[in-house]
Length: 196
Image 1 (cartoon, one colour):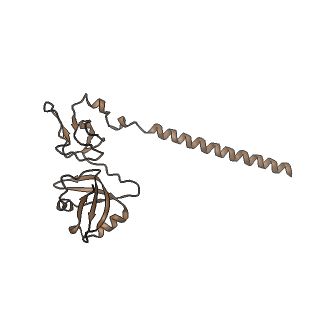
Image 2 (cartoon, one colour):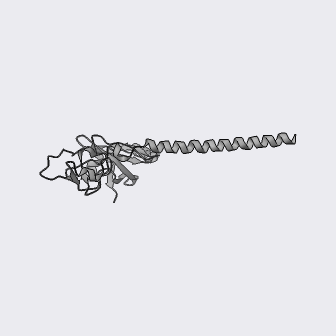
Image 3 (tube, helix red, strand yellow):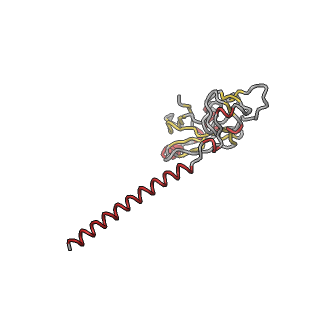
């Protein structure tokens, strides 16, 4: 009986060791395959800054994060070059101030991707124009939205992108609770302010 217990104990210990070994082997294999499957940034369409200098390019006069809507003064071009019209298009590859900008850096539509646990809200263009900040508002900026009482309904929303046709409307990132509060407000009385 005692030998049977020892034999079972040894078999259980070996089984537990085998399960632990298999789990570690599988998890390490999965991590390695995920690392292999991710292409480097240059394969995703973004060109290194040094390689852009060999292409027709302008120079960024402002830092432009992903989804930045390009304005008329955001890229300086040499007067000699036949350059593409980038105004009104969106940055698809982050560009720092002073870096070359090529046509391949831009996309036709922004990619709206809020952070985990955050919600998006498309603020009406009349709120933006009534607040007097429409020309300066762009991706990455932080804003406050004030309600009828003058108190902020949303204290710190991040602009994810500007969607424009005749006028521009910001896509804002905020908490779900802030979004619910904003939806209950009278839209005709909302005001927007850029946070400093």
